[in-house]
Length: 290
Ligand code: NAD
Image (cartoon, rainbow, N blue to C red; front, side, top):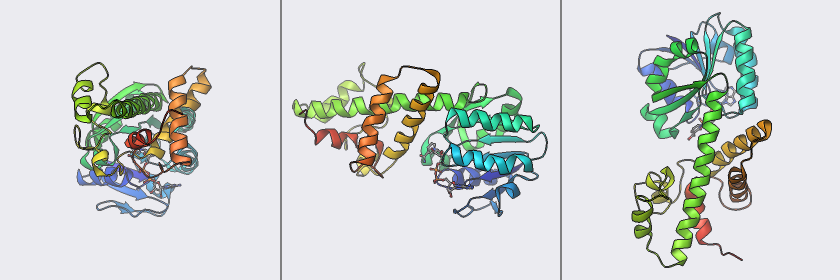
């Protein structure tokens, strides 16, 4: 297939490279980052889109996505599919999809889970919103970049699934970190704490697969001085998207709201910026109740 790839950053570059490696013809555009091996660099978003069967974008936020869509959609040929893989607000995803459909194109929102490691290894999970017929066209490409793609519903459903998942993740990570800090103060050994919780009802991905305590459980960013991994500021971004969506549809999400506040303080007022989101454990460990 002919693919236009827009946004060749930490995630986009390895994703585009994997498509090229699999034999697809990939034209890439980024305002700053270079094109990875196998990807032909072009000098505009519209240039990447012209001729493409599928245009994939991997951009920082919804505002940039909307601006890029304004350039790309008119340049795409009829019947082609615009597939945005960025994590953005549900409203932007729906607006861009409507714009693409009105222009005779297909459209998918297909945010990912799995991080930079998953992008490099081609093991991402895609959560997708849009029409079945568009999903069927893009699915072979998602298979190359990832290990699983779930069509979750109509336009915006992919972003909805992503922010709900990450809201749970933010909340369980905070709960796990504060529980480890409490266990420390109760004199409980961290390894014993892990052994019990990871096989008891307090278990979650946050402790079992990404344990925030160094030297305990599987290898995780905690074992690498909390270098991300998944940076606290990216968790804050996703929690804010969840809160904005909750506001839009009048959903009561008190735990998500509290997690947003905690990560906001950590990133903006403390030393959380640039640290992994599991660095909440040393933060809680250094704090006291009063
Ligand atoms: P990044 O900042 O490394 O990459 C974004 C790229 O977009 C940059 O290279 C930037 O130059 C480019 N860009 C910005 N404006 C542009 C424009 N107008 N036209 C073309 N290119 C433009 O970010 P990333 O880590 O690759 O993340 C991309 C998206 O994936 C984000 O929405 C993020 O939330 C999501 N995501 C990231 C991770 C992760 O672990 N990094 C995991 C899951 C999802």
